[in-house]
Length: 576
Image 1: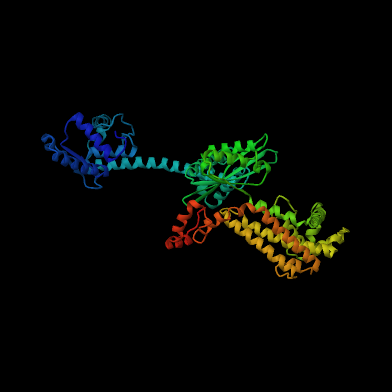
Image 2 (image 1 turned 45 degrees about the horizontal axis):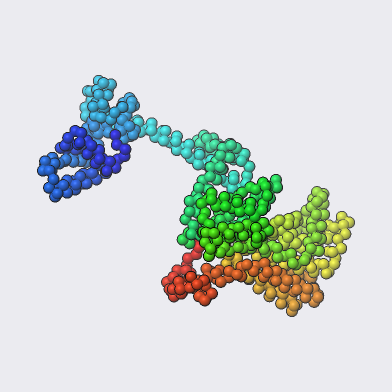
């Protein structure tokens, strides 16, 4: 018995046979590819032996290979049919009784046939014997095909279980939803394809099964990420520390790495911290995360945080400890530390000082939504007036886009809100105050602009230079709008245009936009320090060589002088 059906294995087996039994004069076989390759290789080897003038005796007793015609297994006689049995079952199995033969040798096969089956088949002619052999072989293959189909069906059910479990986890559904999904599939199959109902019933989707599937998927994703990060040329980390509903501090670690223009961006770990959350504690968790994934400190290029003091402390904060760790390995390596751009953008609106507007709007919304009867009556009023909006929503401070949307909704429904408050006897004097309404209109326009920027900054696959370009464009818009307000031009402030504000109001609003521009400049100062590097990455063929780092200036000149690369750069983008 051979380990495989390769040519090398057959040649080695033939050598062992000759060493034990002596030289072989003739070998007869079918047209298997390994035998054909062995014949060619053996003839070539014998010719080489002749040229080396080795033993004349060996050259006189060369082995002759006699090949049967392709697809003519009957030419081999009894031994070919015995080989077929082995090919089908992987072992020496009798086609008649299905019994396994202990040793695969011609003597054992013949003895088994003579002892148990010769009386039954001894009167058959060669043609009848061949037909009987083929019928028995077809029967065995049919039996094997039945078990193969059964195995395939079970594999399909298992794969389906993994797919559905993955979707349950991805959509944050309870694990017990798997049983409900299975019930729906079985009922649907009973109506659409009743013959397939049994296959759907075999899909394992119990709560515990779904839990195991999700754990297996998570483990596999971690292994994939470990293999991926091993090839990172450079990578950066994004860190966010916050508390969950049980007041347990959770540190989220995101990794983004690059390998030959291919970017990988994934959640690396979520570390629970039940004790203190000092810079030292956070550094321990980050270091453990990097060790688990196999990330190398010398390949770390930048870190982005949400700006918490325990993360950004200059003396004992996490970033200081990370820079010290990198410096120990390479004294010349400097990490780039950035504050989350979207978080910075949200913090900038605090300089607008529009609390006197948001407080009143929140009061109006709470009056309508806090009492069930008020809410029902207000919705009925909107249906009666056939307004564009069918309801009004709460303002949630933790949702970045919430304020702008609530202000816009209340402004659009201000007439209906005024009517409803009059019916209820609720006095809201601000709705009749022209100064307050002008501030309200200004707040609606400004928050709408900031929401637009926030939406553009969100999403996967954006580069820091792209986000910085969006921020710079927004800052230019602020300067432009500020100058327009000074000149009493309200072309791009459509909501404010509805209330015709006074010159004093416009001057104050212009100053507020100027203050917002100054806050953006202050908070995004860290991006300006790496503006030259970002410009070199985004536009390497147009950036200034003088402003580039000294170690890449000569290479940058070669790059900018290559017209073929310049054309290729226009067509190719980073893959995320």
